[in-house]
View 1: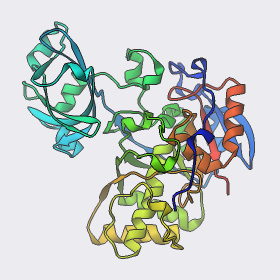
View 2: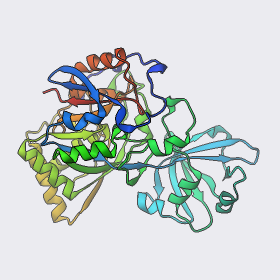
View 3: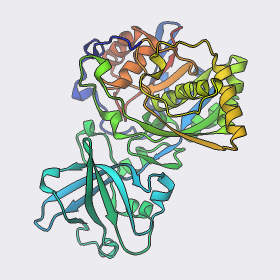
View 4: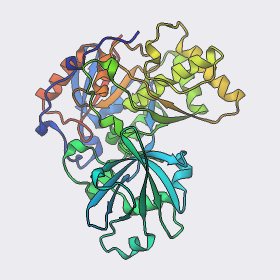
Length: 406
């Protein structure tokens, strides 16, 4: 049953001066707010290893942000910005990025009213190397509120290289500034390796090599998965009732070795720590995919309201994960790819994640609802403390470590 939730009950006042417009000089120097045993404390992110149980399994999202903003111009001189969201053809990320002459993407278009048809040329600003690529864009079709754009270019280089040469890092709109050189490095986690996101999994931006080394020295285990973060992460909930909100879909992938490690952790009763809300969405989706395997069904994508269906289940996380492992083994699948549209709101029952490391999120957002589902009404105390004590908010802001409210 879908919980009845009014989004106005999950908001707060966030003034512009609370939003961190730039990253700190050192990743690990951010502050971290600690919610544990229903009480609050604070420390430095550099002390993270000391804040986590030694038998934890820490799960990172290793997706990599691509420079997805491309600026084109019409013969009249009008500028059109194309913000690439996800591959359309080829629809597989690796195949799309390796294309050497043309490919298509689902995109958001800035100044779209001035582009009805015809080719656009990339604004090279006189750069001779970029002129040789001759990057062009053609509007193919409209899908709901987004567009399908075909890109073509010369020189035999991959579209991944084209993006690197021509694109800009798509920093969040609430920073209210242009992309700068510092964003190319700092709007990217240290461990990012699989290209595909148009927004960073920002909880991971605080991790330095020093912090990772401390985690290893303490004996805390690490695991990785991939969820390609879409632009939907920036969208506020516009409907008054959350039941009317359409959640965005995101592609994730997980290796069988990761599912096995997760199963071992759950069976042992040891804590699973998610680095960021994207890791939470992926990990909790795995339970529902494993449940389908347990019930002899094909492990399909996770739908928005699936966890709230009336057919409640007593299948344990260990049983669901074991079934998923067995299905992957029998199907000879090393890496499973699926999409999730799961929405995590108050009333959600967490099956996998025990501890969450995350930044401070926008009011009226699905991410704030996720936090409220994890810590209950204590989210108000957490955010009030952060606001009253000078914590920095949103993507480049400070961090928190939240121990789930049982």
